[in-house]
Image (cartoon, rainbow, N blue to C red; front, side, top):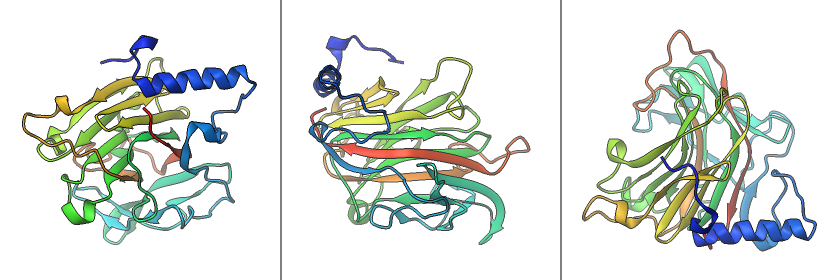
Length: 282
């Protein structure tokens, strides 16, 4: 697992970003990590989730997926109810899994996306997130090809910026899925948090830097995984050269994590401080 790089070995765009941040610091810009980045960095889309507690996320930015299963044998029914998806009044979006009977399911939760509202190719996608915990809890921050409705999955491509098993609170992973390398055959790598606390103990920044022929995953600005067309199975297509839209969700159960058990407490909430997308150059 690659968890560190020498500065001069960073991808060109990442190095340029580092130099820009140093330059901004030298000229007196010192914004907090949750402040809007200067325009010169190339911010093209964001949601800071400001608003009163209980308010639904912006209709101009997000739409709801309502239902269950999603091809992964998930156990929750995803709703558009504020108990499952709403602002917390402290600048965060809360997506909450609840143990309750609803539409024939034993759990409810939330899944939102930007399909038809925003999609983008290349650049940096990032979110600052505090994760839930517990056996069978499966939160994710991911991208799906905007041509999903025309070509289907996995031909549209899928990029998992953050995927996480609640029973392994110190481990996250990134992955790509495409034709010939999807599901259990996806190309992926794990990142393990050092120290005694897990990703449920506080906020962390999960990011993706994407150029036409390279995708790099980062946790708290530490790059840990890079994929290029040369990493694909022989003869398979690189399908990461068109716009993708954003998805945030908290699943309960499913093939990836297994079902909850007696140790799993509910409710479980993923808090998202912000989601931002920056223009290319990485």
